[in-house]
Every structure is written in structure tokens, then in C-alpha cells.
Length: 200
Image (cartoon, rainbow, N blue to C red):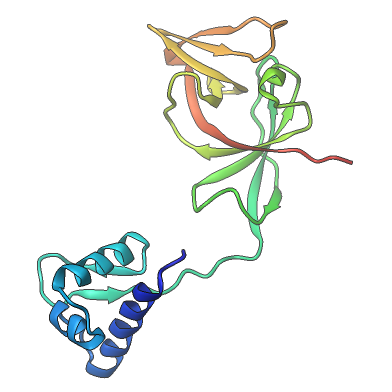
């Protein structure tokens, strides 16, 4: 996470102060130590560093600024490969002990990968042989591309529409009809985040 030069100075000051004194500095001590003009400026920097996950504060006690350890970026991300997904009629859900290695795209979300089989999502540029990266989720908004589990045993990749007590699983292919299933028989397993396509 990128920070400004002044934010780094504030972070370094707090870290050095804690190492030297064994407790965190007050806003006044930070302002004095860095020659900042006002406590509001200190508060702004502290709030920004907190939003970026570099500091943590307990708002009900004084001297409560804790510097959080830096998260190390993994050079390679292993995403579990959970099997294959139908982009036509639903097929039996299966798990496989494989993985798909990526460096990016996920941003700490709980994600798994599926290999697409079929052409029912081709108008959304999801083709047979593509991989979809799916964020684990049990809910979806209207029109989102989801992994839907039907009757507890069959999965399919479709756009999700709740229409009263019925779910419409809509293909993105004009030659294919939507699948209508009573809402109680459909469980959302995730929302598609990204598509990975390998070209030979």
C-alpha cells in the first residue's frame, strides 16, 4: 500500500517512539516531534494510516496507537482448483486436488478457480476452456455471474436473477434457453471476479 512521504515520517516516528519508550506517543508528542502545525494534521495522518492497515487505535483509551506488522506480499499465489464447471446444463459437482498459481487479481478475498466447460456464457466472453476466478459468497445481486448449486448436487455458471420464488439462471448465448428453478433449490456458491484464458 503506497503512503506519502509525510505519512511515512509519522509511521517511523511512532515506531521509533514505541521502541524507545515502550508505549505509543500522544498526538501532541507526534506534532512536536515532527514539527507539525496542528493536532488536526496529526489526526488526519493517523486516520489515513489506519485506513491503509498500517496503524490500529483503541478509541476508548489514550496512547493506544499500535503499529501493525507489514503484510508480506507473496510472490506466488496458489488458488485451489475445485474441479470443472458446466456452462451448459448443470453437471455433478466434483472437487479435484489441483491448484492454479497466480500473482494478482485476488486481493485477499476467499477465491477458488473453476475451468469452464461449454459455450453458454460465450456472449459474456467466457469461453470453453477458460478459467473463472470465483469469490466465495452465498448471496448475489441481480444479473451477477454466479456459480449456482442446483438441488445440492449440480453446478452451473450463469447470470443470476431472482424472480419472485423462482431463480432464473440466464445463459449468455442466444441459442440457449434460461434455466428456471424454485429458489429453495438453488444455492449461490460464489460470484465471478475474473476470467483467465490461456492461449497456446
